[in-house]
Length: 264
DNA sequence: ATCGGTACCTGCACGC
DNA sequence: TGCGTGCAGGTACCGA
Image (cartoon, rainbow, N blue to C red; front, side):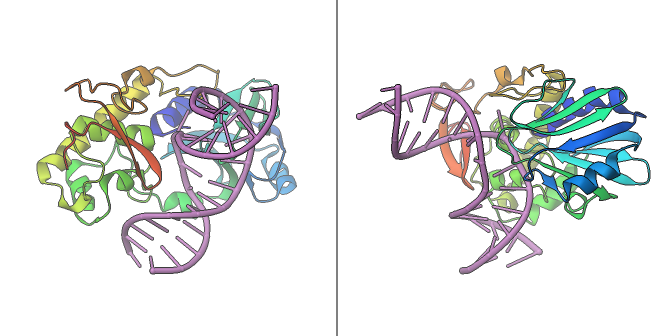
């Protein structure tokens, strides 16, 4: 479900409500989403104070006292809900001194993990797309022979971009999703950097995109889906040229683009 | 080192 | 009504 703007929206809403708060108890149901032992994790969390919450790509990192991190990745359908109602897809319940925090996840692709410091796989992620300067972005691109769409989805290249914002930024930059990253001319790379920055900022501003079931911690939907130009608009006329939007597969992911505005 | 394909889950929309 | 198919904001892992 959630890409950088959705996770950022969650982090912004949640951080002021949990900063400095204490975890009274934790309960884990089912074994799939939690990495590590449920009883040990619950015991280690109980009584701990939350220093702060940060977003790291698509990961939410709860920094606890004692340099421990409770790391949450929402996968495709994960939700964090403050004071929601537990249901059949609730996999974790954190009871805080400021309320109840639930983790719901229908498809169970999300992961929860308690670790000392940041887990290695989170440390190994690429730079934040909203922080990387355009020259550094261009330098990284020059080294990659993969198709640009696949590269944008690769979290060790950039952290936080997913299927929606990859398609939307390529459309805005006028770049074909199958273009080879290293072969893009400098001006195209600069356009892509600008498009990516703007799309992500606008989406954060709109509270993210709610396609089927994304909601923030209070159950509110985002509104950026109404600004999508290509994502899930197969067959609809391109807003720039009127030609129908096409859908192809790139790395097994549905990829939407305008064949006229985004030439090979 | 880097790339692409597959596996992992549940639910929904669709055609027959 | 029910069944089969394809699709969905994700990453991990494997072989080439």
